[in-house]
Length: 182
Image (cartoon, rainbow, N blue to C red; front, side, top):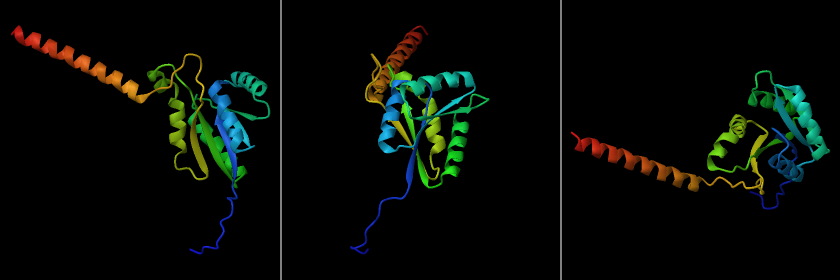
């Protein structure tokens, strides 16, 4: 390799797309983080009820002015496919941009809520994996809602292990007591 060769800056612009489910702390923090990456930020709300989408738009524009808000209608309450289609159409309009999809992850109170509340984020991330000129990043805000704790897999795992051990002890004692009665 030639030591005098100078590599220039990348020529790609970044477009930041943030799927929005409601105006919550995690979405606001994702928008703030997105502003640090690009001026081209779009919030996308996929819904089967346009009236609800307009209400979310009003709240969003009141709390986060200057951010483009797009409502994508999905007749079958499907979230992932309409969002992917929107990203494809946006990429066709501007093929020189790299799309960064920021996925705001909800901070949860209990370890099991992490599984319940963030499933759409996982589905979107899986659907975006391997797409050209598209990068998905899960964004976790630093401040949880009042009383919320972050999910710690090791803490949840310890609880599950303790539960399994207790169940094994119960089954073993039942087996021994049943064996004595023979």
